Image (tube, rainbow, N blue to C red; front, side, top):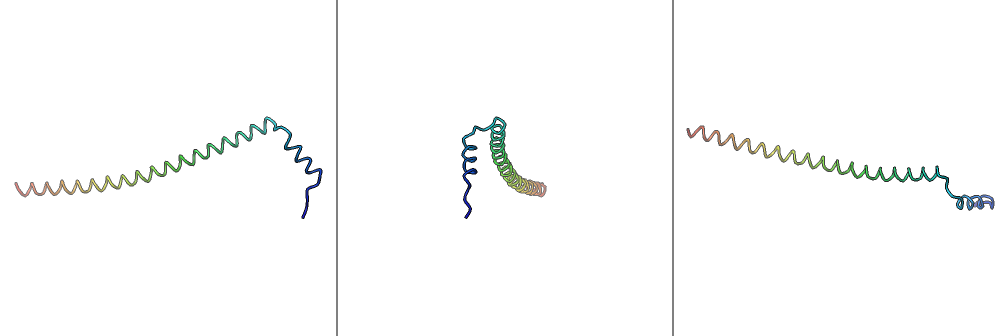
Length: 84
């Protein structure tokens, strides 16, 4: 099993203690911002898909009601024609 050399350990410790450069901080912030935006986009896309499915379901329901109404109107029209 390989162990870290003292020079590697000291360079890691030094790297952990040195402050991040402004460019690195900016990149990290941008990365976090993109993660947050990506999460928001994923939620938005899920919501849109859900609404589209609900819309399709409601359109089918409306279509079924229109068919029933059309049949009822046609039946009543036929009855009225027969009565006259």
